[in-house]
Image (cartoon, rainbow, N blue to C red):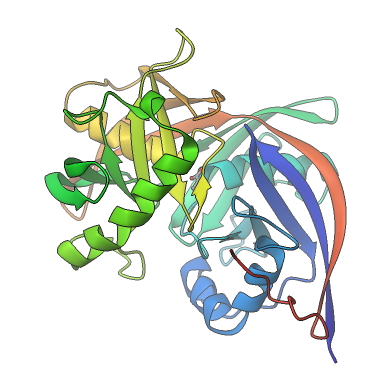
Amino acid sequence: MACSTFTCIDGHTCGNPVRVVVQGGPELHGRNMSEKRQHFLKEFDWIRKGLMFEPRGHDMMSGSIFYPPSNPENDFGILFIETSGCLPMCGHGTIGSITIGIEEGFLVPKSPGKVRMETPAGLVHVEYQQIGNKVDWVKLTNVKSYVAATDLTIDCSFLGELMFDVSYGGNFYAIFDPQHHYSGIQDFTASKLIQFSQDIREKINKKYPGLFSHPEDQTINGVSHIMWTGDTISSEATARNAVFYGDKAIDRSPCGTGTSARMAQWYAKGKLKIGQDFIHESYIGSQFKGRVEAETTLEGIPAIIPSIQGWARVYGHNTITIDDDDPYAHGFQV
Ligand code: PYC
């Protein structure tokens, strides 16, 4: 019988969990984090399942594993592990992982206050402010984000025919703004939004095969996240969202890659200007500050360079074992 031990530090970013595996992560092969992600998915996905799913995790659980950088100019490489798989990029995961790494002393950047982080979706530049031994905020300049398709339709078994746009911010998001059937997320409970999302995500990928594929890395493809939008809770917020991911999760944070995708959508529609603050509110009311830093292109496609700023808190040290002897060694979902 084999028993694997993982030293983890747990925290949350604006309410959404981040479990960083400090010791016990597998050695991965590949020239960059995209290739290392493929290696992990092929051989070590049981680690993700064991640490993210019940009974050691839960529906919303997500985390990361740190790796040495492929390019010595960078500080580290990151693998995101979630109930949904290994995301190419994760905004709340970045904010939480950087906070945990700096506060716990296992991430020592070459230039204090700045981190060059290799993700499967590309290089991400991060800034943070440290006050004493606490990280006050983390700001990431995300990968190029762009609108992949607009005015698509899907038949939702619960809401009828819905229109949506698909936008990329490190993952592909189907964005559903309020329409004639309903006035926004305030009309629904989280469990209803989960039910609607479960109904349509597969249908979207079946109806539009091959439409959502990253122009520079075809391993990033398909709509993985559904974003529902609606009225803000706070008058300071620009917009609010509920992001569905995995099989049963609604992001408790405002979702970093989702905010990037939505800013790309707003920018393309002329609703947001370069440098303008975009305060994005989550389903529970926590906030990220987003901004379009610059306009750019991605293989000729108009795109933006978005930034996201948010905070995280560290709350626990956890030594987790996954023992082959345990019938639920590799987790379960109900
Ligand atoms: O913050 O990018 C994000 C994210 C993705 C899934 C959950 N959070």
